[in-house]
Image (cartoon, rainbow, N blue to C red):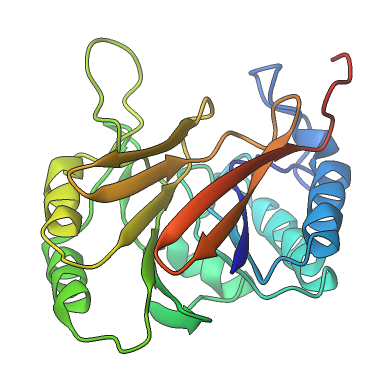
Length: 247
């Protein structure tokens, strides 16, 4: 399998202005996304996953117009795609009235996809939480026999690993340790994909589970990734829309 993976577009078009954080090049994202998707098509990707913060603001009514524009851009590339909303996106119930809601559980080739697009984000404490019901569902999904599945890919916006320590903005879940414990109790090969932390974190293994946090597409050099899977093995090929150029 070849899986395109990108995250944190912070796209603005219908919503005026741009981010107060200058390095987030929100108004370039239409052009950047088109180039990234074109590169994934050219490499023969089987699927594109976007891990949230698709648009840049959740509290402007025009944000849903931006979601609709992104939907058209993803659809136009011709590849199967799925997206989960992030904390900068409209709430899931509004977001998924515009973008297609992916199945909670699906299959592409020998990869099983478990998708979490409804984790509530508390703007007051700036943390998402996975509900007890969804943790129970995840535990059951990871213990249910899945003949022919070589790799289970768990998709969400907020970071699961590495665990946050020290001061600074916490990109992880309020209950990230509980989520990791469920993943790490599974006997299956599991890959957890996240966004949210714009710096990203390289593919790493912790207690038998592989974790990857994508770098933000909206920041130079506009990075994304192509994941190569062969059975349970995963190799990450880092790509960028503007490799080697001067910012």
